[in-house]
Length: 63
Image (cartoon, rainbow, N blue to C red; front, side, top):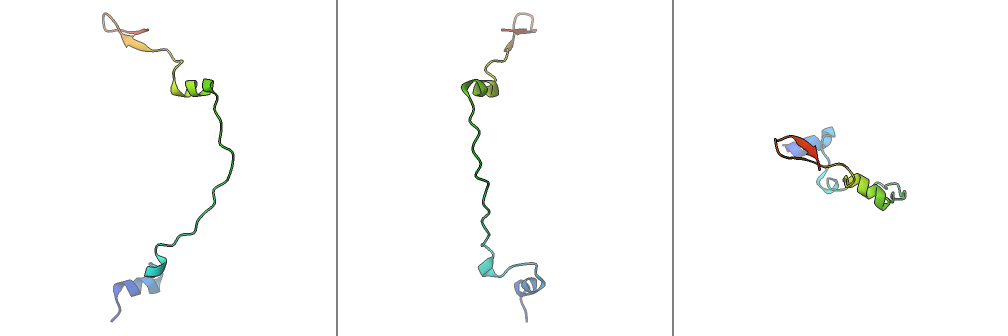
């Protein structure tokens, strides 16, 4: 009597136990990383954007 695991292997729906954990390694492209200037970092973090807050009367106003 065959087991369910053996039937799956025969039909190609599963791999044998020794080959299940093996995967081929793929190489990533070794391109240069992008270097940001301090000005670009400040723009990305939003430090130069206007800030708004609620003042008297509950309206949004620029600080």
